[in-house]
Length: 115
Length: 113
Image (cartoon, rainbow over all chains, first blue to last red; front, side):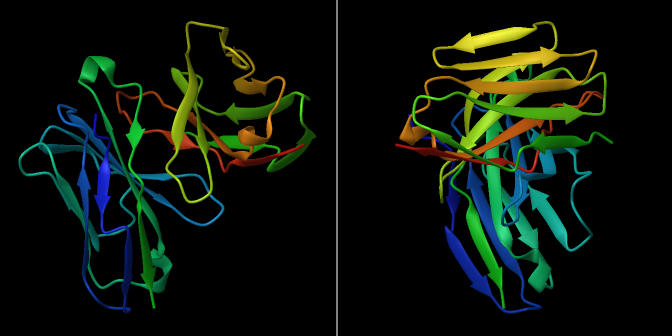
């Protein structure tokens, strides 16, 4: 079946601009996660959705970052007033129901470059 | 919060040799420990995982061992092949009812034919 998909695959934006990154989880997966991966580092947790609600947003670095999942499926990560330090690969992952939350399936990522 | 350290950062072996990567963690209540493989430009993919009530798990050439007392777990790859070359990440699910994973910094494994 189809895996987790993310669009766009690459995004180049100027400092100060607003960007939206989209994640389409595996069909039927209720848990959705966003991570950020800087060059040479492991993924860093940003936010976790269970259904439509953000159950844990403790990893969002500041209030320029926001994410939504209005219908419990597709999620959008929004970054306002982008800074060069936001440049990274943004990974989305999804997981089955809460009783099977352990395995997280990752998408291919969106490479964000802020110039 | 949870802190995960991974060693070594790079590992070079000859084809057929074994490779061992170790991770330590700080939260003794952490209960799930997956390992992910990431090839260049690709997504991380789960290769093996272990839960806190098990000490060892094996899947063909790959095994993971967990020492809860010492708070460390290790990935063992036997009979390495060139296609095992990739970056390997350990991760920990900390306690507290949250489903996030805390990742190590990664180990770049190179298997030379």
